[in-house]
Length: 487
Image 1 (cartoon, rainbow, N blue to C red):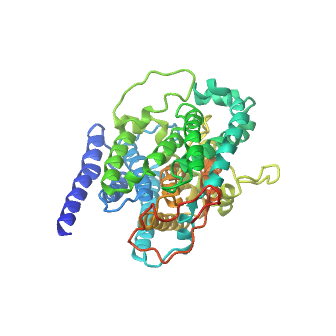
Image 2 (cartoon, rainbow, N blue to C red; image 1 turned 90 degrees about the vertical axis):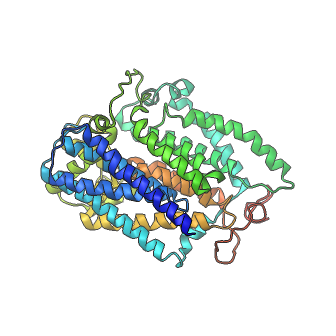
């Protein structure tokens, strides 16, 4: 045990040197640094996020939710703002004052501290079982609902793919899909709902079918149906969830959930290697992965990471936070804004005072013609009630995230449970949640979190979960004749 602790300590130190010292140092080395109070606070943010990410990458258990959170915090709200503050260069035209920049950096750190506190409290009270979360995540995949979902997905594909321009548009660009839908900006919401109402169920059908537990003996009918549907669903997901016609964050969610939901990724060593590769990919490849957004392909201009942070609109979050702080000073806080994402399905015709998408509203406040911008969860919650609402949101997010990771790692007979599917899906998609805006992602997030309940069934009551796992082949496998659960 002691040797393992020494190796863990050395690994934490090595990653900390890379994430807190080497990478920020390389970025600042390329820049003409301008010192200031905001930059000093941002250095604290980078150290906090980098240190936390180093701990996740060297943990003795797999912590997917924590990894997704700290990866986003380190890159989008750590390194990117560091480069912006060091050079006073931003990807968008609006310029806030020094005070707004300082407040934005403090806001990020307050959110990180609250998240850390929430996760720490949840870890210290791990013995106090979360009855609701454990009941949800212990649900078992049920064969009959999964097969019905597959059938529904194929019906939706036949009906909805032509409305999105057919196969040609889906393999051309996101612009081609939008134009194929017809209409103007007024129909953007309905077109998005049409697209997501196929993309998300298709993803869940494939994921559930891959992880559908089968008995070692019997279930020949189920095995046959499964192997017949798998290639069809795989092909359908290539069509509707490819990175050409879908946002990169969503395409990444599909691919990475399939990867991290595999049994091999439950092993800490395999997770660490894959997570480290993902960190490098996000830093080096992500800025160039938007090649298929428009019909006209622009030449790929490879520049330094520092220049990407200060010129690429993918990293607009910190600047949007500054805009939001100015907006709050001008218009004040509005707790009712919280209801907009929660009640996103209510049409504006029935709710004339429905809050506007925060990313759009901040873009309009700044005078941009292009409104498809982010609004990180930090500024979303800040606009509700200031720092208190930010602290409350991130305390809750940290506590729930830690509980989800812990439950997934200790569930007995975890194969075939909802934890295997939902935790990786939430862990990756939470980066979209953190980037915002909430109104923009409320629809796909709702589908992502609710569809699993229709393809799973409550697990039979068992004694309190213990660290001793039940062999996957002896419990919780469903037969085709039932609705799931124990045979």
